[in-house]
Image 1 (cartoon, rainbow, N blue to C red):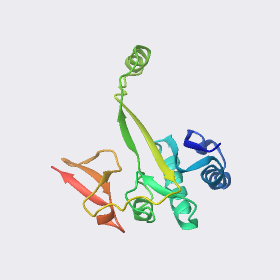
Image 2 (cartoon, helix red, strand yellow):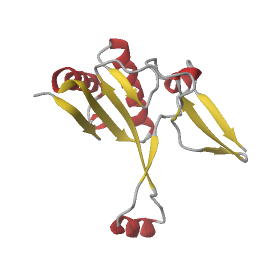
Image 3 (cartoon, rainbow, N blue to C red):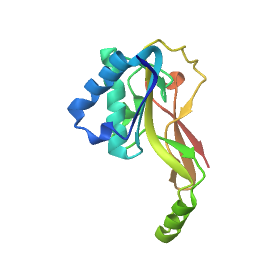
Length: 166
């Protein structure tokens, strides 16, 4: 029986690049219900996330699936084309368990947010986004008294929108 939701969490980054697309294609075609979703989630590391961005483009170019998130479009990733240093990721707030707080204190870090890169895929077409819908696809980019964020949306293609706060 086909599933409504298939999760592939911290899996693809552990595999050779040549095996990633065939696995995603197999999950989409063989295991996912027609209206189902495949969530691929990986650590928010530059190389891991950029590999996921390349997979995004390959899925669209070969027309084996539809990207529902984080992208609000069905075009090649503008961040991937823009440069080789940025990567698409998100922050998820969470309540740290006590044992994580202790580790954070010992390591002098604070994990108020979990970071990840992800693709939410499906088979059926998505509703088109409007030109005024945007999604934040970067962490804060701080430099010289300003903070910037990169936003992705239909209205910015083929580039990203860079929002600056002084």
